[in-house]
Length: 176
Image (cartoon, rainbow, N blue to C red; front, side):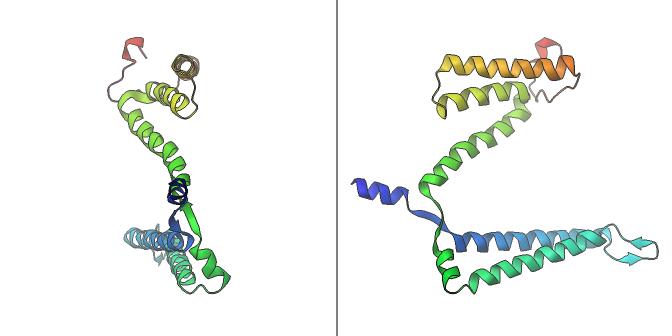
């Protein structure tokens, strides 16, 4: 039973070759998008010099060529390169650790727009300390509030640089 769990946790979710091929396709598509956009801006050399899309056009072409090169290299790999392509890029355990940080960060970014950077950051720090740092609730809440109170004083009061308070602006009662 334990060996099944270990092999399940260590099983590769993607190989290096698969990730290389996917990234190569994405780079090619990005390059094609840049080429398309730069053509709309004007990628030609006119009487008064290069158009606004001139340099982005060539950057897009370089991206397309790079994507094709990496994709071809991945498909044509032989010997050690082929073995390396078959190696695991990421396993379940590593991906779980990455997602444990990535998902809350994405939620935090979305929360900043709704409840503002100070409240979202206080909640983010508190939950991060509790769930990932294994700290107690009281200590985590105190640190989350203290850090953001300090940032609020620093930006809003001392520097007079207002930061985003969010659509619902839960700190509007403070008058800032």
